[in-house]
Image 1 (cartoon, rainbow, N blue to C red):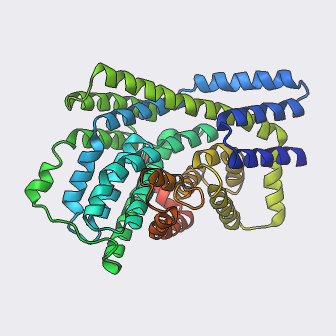
Image 2 (cartoon, rainbow, N blue to C red):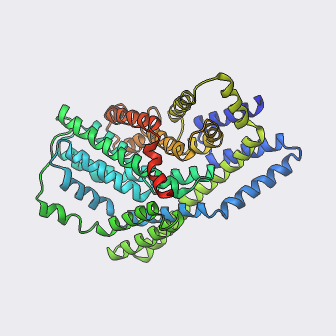
Image 3 (cartoon, rainbow, N blue to C red):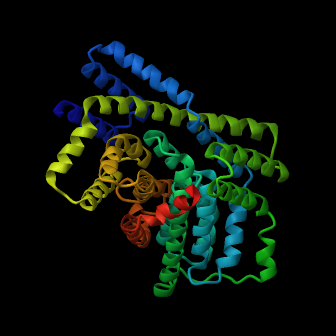
Length: 434
């Protein structure tokens, strides 16, 4: 038991404090661990690694990921972000903190459709930051708003993080997507409430924006109706059980292609670049996922999950106390490494523990992804913060983190409610299953 734990701990340290490629580190570590523990040595390690790669390549559930990535790439190519922000600004801008609310709403919609928090943060920085500056927002708070808003794409379906979690735990992608709907909507509402409160309590940070007529507001929806209908079709179809997650991915990619064509943005170069970018992103995720599956085989062979469960049971802690300890561990880990690395590394060990305590793994998937969201804006790593810093070099990192503080407070409350009220995530899937 000690040797596997040392190997696993060394792996965590290696990934946290070096810039080595995550997928290759996990694959080589897993293969080395299997070779050390298996009676057939290196031969067994190579055979298991080969089998895991082949299984992943032929996994029907994994095919949903490149389809939704392609949908997101087409949405980005269509230039949708500008229209989303403009429409949200016309509808919400006249409230206290209204331009910030528009930024949150646009970030939520765009990051959900492009399934990338970093892309949402980078894109919205270009679009929303000039408008927030023009409206007189505190620059640190404005940057914090964009960084926090960009995290929402990880939870709101279609979510790449939920697909990866489903792959590692063999849970249903469709069920996880449906489970993410209510918590995702709650996150958007919580962030909008933060903007309203800041606008009321500190009007210098988030002043009121201009008011638009209803004619101007409805006019802003003309260029968005196609993609809004597509997104609604995907979510309603998944919730109602009309089609599987993979079929939804195909509908999304095909619909987004038609949307780009309808807007006159589709050229051969755009089409080719979209396919290449999708292949590049999918390939990177495939390598990391393959490495995680090989590492997972080593973890199971070493007996870490079973021994960890036995050790926790010997402590005589209540199940909820164990959950809070795991959350604390995740929050600490989120300060040191990328959120997706956390999912790949910890889910194979943590999921059996959570299941042994009698908790639903679909609920735990939503909790895990929520913690990963928080890690994107938590110091000292906070990947979204450093994306903002790279695009706004004159703005100190400390000032961005200060602007994020109100959103982190809302995240803490939201996470606590999600832990104490599992029905927030499980209510909608239970309706679908019936």
